[in-house]
Length: 131
Image 1 (cartoon, one colour):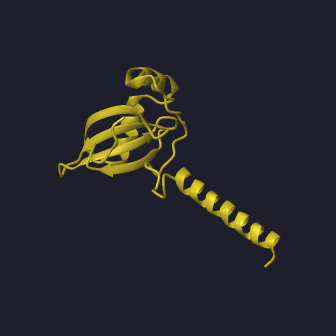
Image 2: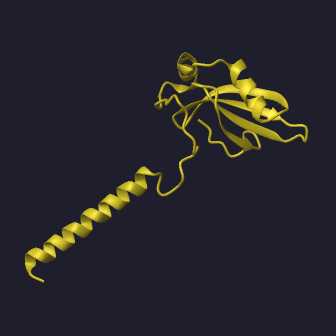
């Protein structure tokens, strides 16, 4: 291999390696994005704290909490314990916690844009990241 070919191979390998590292970093260091679903309304992160974010989220939602509860109860029957409008990693969703007849807590994620049930988590708030 002459000098130019060697330099081309090294630069090509470096470029490929840098691209792979960047891709892994962009994908959360190889971890699956949580949540794995996407809502119809995307919300960028905001640095104004939860109080400012709550008002902003409410202005973006296209359905109200009553419709979100109806959608959640159509998927999981039981007693609603709590409903909150949340920014789940950029997804605007209602989190509807339902206690089932077997005393399990299910956290139903409802799209705040169209009322579709996106995901059901067993265990309510367990395992959720704090904002």
